[in-house]
Amino acid sequence: MSTKGLLIVLSGPSGVGKGTVCSALRTRMPELIYSVSATTRQPRLGEVDGTNYFFKDREQFLSMIEHDQLLEYAEYVGNYYGTPRDFVEETLAKGKDIILEIEVQGALKVKEKFPDGIFIFLTPPSLDELKDRIVGRGTESQAVIDHRMSVAVDELDLIRHYDYAVVNDEINQACKRIESIIIAEHCKVRA
Ligand SMILES: Nc1nc2c(ncn2[C@@H]2O[C@H](COP(=O)(O)OP(=O)(O)O)[C@@H](O)[C@H]2O)c(=O)[nH]1
Ligand SMILES: Nc1ncnc2c1ncn2[C@@H]1O[C@H](COP(=O)(O)OP(=O)(O)O)[C@@H](O)[C@H]1O
Image (cartoon, rainbow, N blue to C red; front, side, top):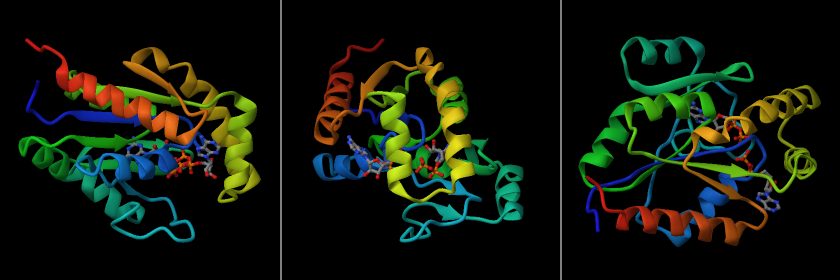
């Protein structure tokens, strides 16, 4: 059984349920650490700076890039998103597992730096269900929903770069699958 911390990357199209699954996982796996990203996106109603994201303006974000403070970053539907580097490295150095909820371009960059990371892609039961969820959430304008749906089709094509695909048909089942993956990865015999 490995005592080293695992770097876990969870990706999936907008509206698939990443945020919902992550908050349910927090209850099931209180020892798992969550990376809080920086973004230039406007906060949604109820989102808290430092908890959901570190909300930055474009200039602040570009300064983080310039000072090499981000492990990876990507532009997604008109905004920047990036993973603060120090927190991830410090968490892994303490032997704790950390989960990054990030989109595919960023995930592929993390894979280059951490080939031993565990890459999990959360999929919707269908594209119709995905659209229903993103519309049902009610946080985006119609134009942003359309853009996110077209990005989703391209993202689904990149599943092949991931180690695991988990369907989010039901929240508890999806969490159970992710928890099982993490437990199994800790049992893996590594060189
Ligand atoms: N590359 C990268 N993507 C991120 C990061 N943080 C969040 N994302 C992704 O950016 C996309 C948009 O996030 P958000 O605007 O919160 O929308 P939501 O995922 O639909 O709730 C999602 O795919 C997130 O997983 C990050 O630090 N880096
Ligand atoms: N398994 C599920 N079944 C039905 N609805 C879900 C499921 N998982 C998430 N949802 C709903 O779908 C919407 C989008 O979920 P969210 O977690 O915000 O997605 P993401 O973070 O991937 O963009 C929310 O309204 C959420 O309540």
